[in-house]
Image (cartoon, rainbow, N blue to C red; front, side):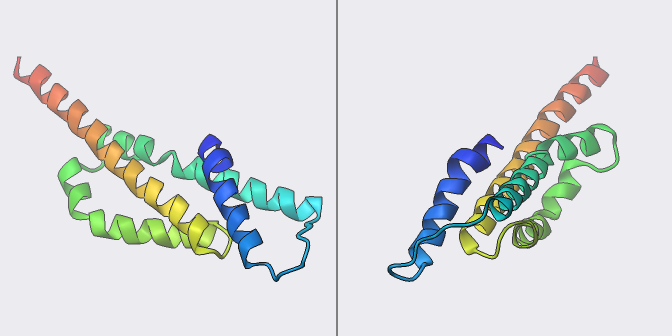
Length: 125
């Protein structure tokens, strides 16, 4: 949520104000503003759970790191589709959700690889 609040909101609101017609004052009602903020918070909150999900799936043996690495192109496309569905209809917030989601997927793979190597070393002893 901190990422959304400190990074996404300033960029998104700057974009919204830049596309407004000249001389128009942007004044949204509080209900629409809060709906927008809560949707973004929830979307980014779920997105930042990606490394935990990847790690738990590998740790539990449901999948392995090599299988997830082969699915990487689908994960990238899926991240952008989720970014499109979960954010307002602008490219900036979609990209600001999709790219961190992809990077967090990669972080989950790294964490799972480290734990798998440690588990293999412990099994060999």
